[in-house]
Length: 257
Image (spheres, rainbow, N blue to C red):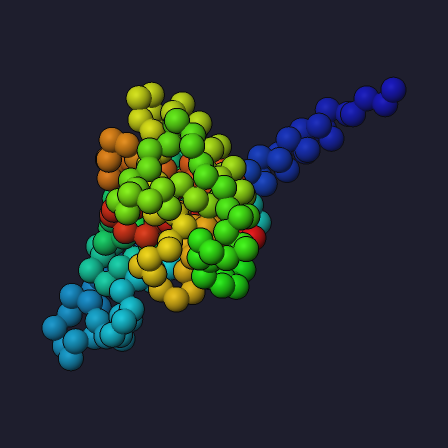
Protein backbone atom coordinates (compact mmCIF):
# COMPACT_ATOMS: atom_id res chain seq x y z
CA UNK A 1 0.00 0.00 0.00
CA UNK A 2 1.27 3.43 -0.92
CA UNK A 3 0.55 6.14 1.63
CA UNK A 4 0.13 9.66 0.31
CA UNK A 5 2.57 12.04 1.89
CA UNK A 6 1.13 14.82 4.04
CA UNK A 7 2.18 17.61 1.65
CA UNK A 8 0.47 15.83 -1.24
CA UNK A 9 -2.73 15.32 0.76
CA UNK A 10 -2.74 18.97 1.77
CA UNK A 11 -2.24 20.01 -1.84
CA UNK A 12 -5.15 17.79 -2.98
CA UNK A 13 -7.44 19.27 -0.30
CA UNK A 14 -6.44 22.77 -1.32
CA UNK A 15 -7.22 21.97 -4.96
CA UNK A 16 -10.65 20.54 -4.08
CA UNK A 17 -11.48 23.60 -1.99
CA UNK A 18 -10.40 25.84 -4.84
CA UNK A 19 -12.67 23.96 -7.25
CA UNK A 20 -15.64 24.37 -4.92
CA UNK A 21 -14.97 28.07 -4.50
CA UNK A 22 -14.60 28.48 -8.24
CA UNK A 23 -17.91 26.71 -8.90
CA UNK A 24 -19.71 28.87 -6.35
CA UNK A 25 -18.06 31.93 -7.87
CA UNK A 26 -19.34 30.98 -11.32
CA UNK A 27 -22.91 30.67 -10.06
CA UNK A 28 -22.78 33.97 -8.21
CA UNK A 29 -21.26 35.69 -11.24
CA UNK A 30 -23.99 34.29 -13.48
CA UNK A 31 -26.69 35.45 -11.08
CA UNK A 32 -25.16 38.91 -10.89
CA UNK A 33 -25.03 39.10 -14.69
CA UNK A 34 -28.72 38.28 -14.96
CA UNK A 35 -29.50 40.78 -12.22
CA UNK A 36 -27.76 43.46 -14.28
CA UNK A 37 -29.86 42.51 -17.31
CA UNK A 38 -33.11 42.70 -15.35
CA UNK A 39 -32.15 46.00 -13.78
CA UNK A 40 -31.36 47.42 -17.21
CA UNK A 41 -34.71 46.24 -18.53
CA UNK A 42 -36.51 47.80 -15.60
CA UNK A 43 -34.71 51.12 -15.92
CA UNK A 44 -35.21 51.21 -19.68
CA UNK A 45 -38.87 50.25 -19.44
CA UNK A 46 -39.47 52.90 -16.79
CA UNK A 47 -37.90 55.67 -18.84
CA UNK A 48 -40.28 58.11 -20.48
CA UNK A 49 -38.05 58.81 -23.48
CA UNK A 50 -39.59 57.61 -26.74
CA UNK A 51 -41.13 54.51 -25.18
CA UNK A 52 -37.88 52.50 -25.04
CA UNK A 53 -39.87 49.54 -23.68
CA UNK A 54 -40.49 48.58 -27.30
CA UNK A 55 -36.78 47.98 -27.75
CA UNK A 56 -37.02 44.90 -25.52
CA UNK A 57 -40.73 44.11 -25.71
CA UNK A 58 -42.15 44.87 -29.18
CA UNK A 59 -45.78 44.07 -29.93
CA UNK A 60 -46.58 40.42 -29.32
CA UNK A 61 -43.66 39.81 -26.94
CA UNK A 62 -44.14 40.07 -23.19
CA UNK A 63 -41.67 37.55 -21.80
CA UNK A 64 -37.91 37.14 -22.12
CA UNK A 65 -36.21 33.94 -20.97
CA UNK A 66 -32.47 33.73 -20.34
CA UNK A 67 -30.36 30.76 -19.34
CA UNK A 68 -26.69 30.42 -18.44
CA UNK A 69 -25.00 27.05 -18.02
CA UNK A 70 -21.32 26.80 -17.03
CA UNK A 71 -20.24 23.31 -16.09
CA UNK A 72 -22.73 22.01 -13.55
CA UNK A 73 -23.92 25.50 -12.67
CA UNK A 74 -27.19 26.57 -14.25
CA UNK A 75 -29.07 29.82 -13.70
CA UNK A 76 -32.31 30.67 -15.46
CA UNK A 77 -34.28 33.89 -15.51
CA UNK A 78 -37.66 34.86 -16.87
CA UNK A 79 -38.68 38.51 -17.00
CA UNK A 80 -41.93 39.97 -18.30
CA UNK A 81 -42.50 43.41 -19.78
CA UNK A 82 -43.56 44.85 -16.42
CA UNK A 83 -41.20 42.91 -14.18
CA UNK A 84 -39.11 44.39 -11.42
CA UNK A 85 -35.50 43.47 -10.82
CA UNK A 86 -35.32 40.68 -8.24
CA UNK A 87 -33.02 40.51 -5.30
CA UNK A 88 -30.44 37.89 -6.25
CA UNK A 89 -29.58 34.98 -3.98
CA UNK A 90 -26.64 32.78 -5.07
CA UNK A 91 -28.36 29.72 -6.60
CA UNK A 92 -25.96 27.36 -4.87
CA UNK A 93 -27.24 28.60 -1.51
CA UNK A 94 -30.94 29.32 -1.93
CA UNK A 95 -33.69 29.99 -4.42
CA UNK A 96 -36.03 32.96 -4.59
CA UNK A 97 -39.50 32.35 -3.20
CA UNK A 98 -41.73 30.86 -5.92
CA UNK A 99 -44.01 33.32 -7.69
CA UNK A 100 -47.48 32.58 -8.98
CA UNK A 101 -47.22 34.77 -12.06
CA UNK A 102 -44.71 35.33 -14.84
CA UNK A 103 -45.14 39.05 -14.13
CA UNK A 104 -42.67 38.50 -11.30
CA UNK A 105 -39.11 37.78 -12.36
CA UNK A 106 -37.51 34.75 -10.77
CA UNK A 107 -34.16 33.05 -10.83
CA UNK A 108 -34.30 29.38 -10.02
CA UNK A 109 -32.56 26.07 -10.40
CA UNK A 110 -33.84 23.28 -12.63
CA UNK A 111 -36.15 21.13 -10.52
CA UNK A 112 -38.07 23.91 -8.80
CA UNK A 113 -41.82 24.43 -9.08
CA UNK A 114 -42.95 25.93 -12.38
CA UNK A 115 -44.14 29.51 -12.86
CA UNK A 116 -46.68 30.67 -15.41
CA UNK A 117 -45.30 30.38 -18.91
CA UNK A 118 -42.75 27.66 -18.09
CA UNK A 119 -42.40 24.81 -20.58
CA UNK A 120 -40.49 21.64 -19.75
CA UNK A 121 -38.61 20.96 -21.87
CA UNK A 122 -38.29 24.48 -23.24
CA UNK A 123 -39.05 23.46 -26.83
CA UNK A 124 -42.10 23.42 -29.07
CA UNK A 125 -44.65 20.78 -28.12
CA UNK A 126 -44.63 19.29 -31.62
CA UNK A 127 -40.83 19.00 -31.55
CA UNK A 128 -40.97 16.99 -28.32
CA UNK A 129 -44.15 14.92 -28.72
CA UNK A 130 -44.58 14.86 -32.48
CA UNK A 131 -47.22 16.60 -34.58
CA UNK A 132 -50.84 15.52 -34.73
CA UNK A 133 -51.67 13.10 -37.55
CA UNK A 134 -55.46 13.43 -37.53
CA UNK A 135 -58.44 14.41 -35.43
CA UNK A 136 -59.75 11.19 -34.01
CA UNK A 137 -63.53 10.75 -34.13
CA UNK A 138 -65.55 8.10 -32.34
CA UNK A 139 -66.23 6.42 -35.66
CA UNK A 140 -62.52 6.23 -36.59
CA UNK A 141 -60.50 3.04 -36.28
CA UNK A 142 -57.94 4.99 -34.21
CA UNK A 143 -60.57 5.60 -31.52
CA UNK A 144 -60.15 1.97 -30.47
CA UNK A 145 -56.58 2.81 -29.46
CA UNK A 146 -57.78 5.24 -26.81
CA UNK A 147 -58.46 4.03 -23.28
CA UNK A 148 -60.92 5.21 -20.66
CA UNK A 149 -59.18 6.31 -17.46
CA UNK A 150 -61.31 5.36 -14.45
CA UNK A 151 -58.69 5.98 -11.76
CA UNK A 152 -60.52 6.92 -8.52
CA UNK A 153 -57.61 9.24 -7.64
CA UNK A 154 -58.48 11.42 -10.65
CA UNK A 155 -61.50 13.75 -10.88
CA UNK A 156 -62.83 14.44 -14.37
CA UNK A 157 -64.69 17.64 -15.15
CA UNK A 158 -66.66 15.98 -17.99
CA UNK A 159 -68.54 19.17 -18.80
CA UNK A 160 -69.73 17.58 -22.04
CA UNK A 161 -71.35 14.72 -20.15
CA UNK A 162 -70.01 12.22 -22.70
CA UNK A 163 -67.01 10.82 -20.83
CA UNK A 164 -64.69 12.32 -23.46
CA UNK A 165 -62.34 13.70 -20.80
CA UNK A 166 -61.65 10.14 -19.65
CA UNK A 167 -60.54 9.07 -23.12
CA UNK A 168 -56.82 9.30 -23.85
CA UNK A 169 -53.83 7.44 -25.22
CA UNK A 170 -52.40 4.60 -23.16
CA UNK A 171 -49.20 6.55 -22.59
CA UNK A 172 -51.05 9.62 -21.31
CA UNK A 173 -53.22 7.46 -19.06
CA UNK A 174 -50.16 5.83 -17.52
CA UNK A 175 -48.50 9.20 -16.90
CA UNK A 176 -51.64 10.67 -15.31
CA UNK A 177 -52.04 7.62 -13.07
CA UNK A 178 -48.48 8.11 -11.85
CA UNK A 179 -49.12 11.82 -11.31
CA UNK A 180 -52.39 11.15 -9.47
CA UNK A 181 -50.54 8.92 -7.00
CA UNK A 182 -47.93 11.62 -6.43
CA UNK A 183 -50.61 14.29 -5.94
CA UNK A 184 -52.33 12.09 -3.35
CA UNK A 185 -49.03 11.71 -1.50
CA UNK A 186 -48.13 15.40 -1.80
CA UNK A 187 -51.51 16.73 -0.65
CA UNK A 188 -53.57 14.10 1.25
CA UNK A 189 -57.25 14.63 0.48
CA UNK A 190 -56.51 16.34 -2.85
CA UNK A 191 -57.00 14.63 -6.20
CA UNK A 192 -55.64 15.31 -9.65
CA UNK A 193 -58.37 16.87 -11.83
CA UNK A 194 -58.62 16.59 -15.62
CA UNK A 195 -60.59 19.38 -17.26
CA UNK A 196 -59.81 18.38 -20.85
CA UNK A 197 -58.25 15.33 -22.48
CA UNK A 198 -59.47 13.91 -25.79
CA UNK A 199 -61.42 16.60 -27.66
CA UNK A 200 -64.23 15.58 -30.01
CA UNK A 201 -65.88 18.99 -30.13
CA UNK A 202 -63.17 20.96 -31.97
CA UNK A 203 -62.59 23.29 -29.02
CA UNK A 204 -58.83 23.62 -29.53
CA UNK A 205 -56.48 24.85 -32.23
CA UNK A 206 -56.24 22.76 -35.37
CA UNK A 207 -52.93 21.16 -34.41
CA UNK A 208 -53.79 20.39 -30.77
CA UNK A 209 -52.75 17.00 -29.44
CA UNK A 210 -56.06 16.93 -27.55
CA UNK A 211 -57.60 15.61 -30.78
CA UNK A 212 -55.46 12.48 -30.52
CA UNK A 213 -55.96 12.03 -26.80
CA UNK A 214 -52.30 12.85 -26.18
CA UNK A 215 -52.84 16.03 -24.15
CA UNK A 216 -54.65 16.96 -20.97
CA UNK A 217 -55.39 20.13 -19.02
CA UNK A 218 -54.97 19.71 -15.29
CA UNK A 219 -55.85 21.33 -11.98
CA UNK A 220 -56.32 19.93 -8.50
CA UNK A 221 -59.56 18.91 -6.80
CA UNK A 222 -60.43 20.95 -4.79
CA UNK A 223 -59.27 23.66 -7.17
CA UNK A 224 -56.33 25.60 -5.75
CA UNK A 225 -54.39 27.87 -8.15
CA UNK A 226 -51.55 28.09 -5.62
CA UNK A 227 -50.82 24.41 -6.17
CA UNK A 228 -50.41 24.65 -9.97
CA UNK A 229 -46.72 25.47 -9.98
CA UNK A 230 -45.99 22.43 -7.86
CA UNK A 231 -48.42 20.35 -9.92
CA UNK A 232 -46.45 21.24 -13.04
CA UNK A 233 -43.20 20.05 -11.50
CA UNK A 234 -44.86 16.83 -10.31
CA UNK A 235 -46.13 16.26 -13.86
CA UNK A 236 -42.56 16.49 -15.14
CA UNK A 237 -41.39 14.02 -12.52
CA UNK A 238 -44.30 11.68 -13.36
CA UNK A 239 -42.95 11.33 -16.87
CA UNK A 240 -45.17 13.61 -18.94
CA UNK A 241 -43.15 14.32 -22.06
CA UNK A 242 -44.07 18.02 -22.29
CA UNK A 243 -45.45 20.21 -19.52
CA UNK A 244 -46.65 23.80 -19.91
CA UNK A 245 -47.85 25.93 -17.02
CA UNK A 246 -50.16 27.62 -19.49
CA UNK A 247 -52.02 30.12 -17.30
CA UNK A 248 -53.30 30.75 -13.80
CA UNK A 249 -56.14 28.29 -14.39
CA UNK A 250 -54.44 25.07 -15.44
CA UNK A 251 -51.36 23.10 -16.40
CA UNK A 252 -51.19 21.53 -19.86
CA UNK A 253 -49.37 18.22 -20.37
CA UNK A 254 -48.83 16.06 -23.43
CA UNK A 255 -47.07 12.83 -24.41
CA UNK A 256 -45.43 11.21 -27.39
CA UNK A 257 -47.38 8.86 -29.62
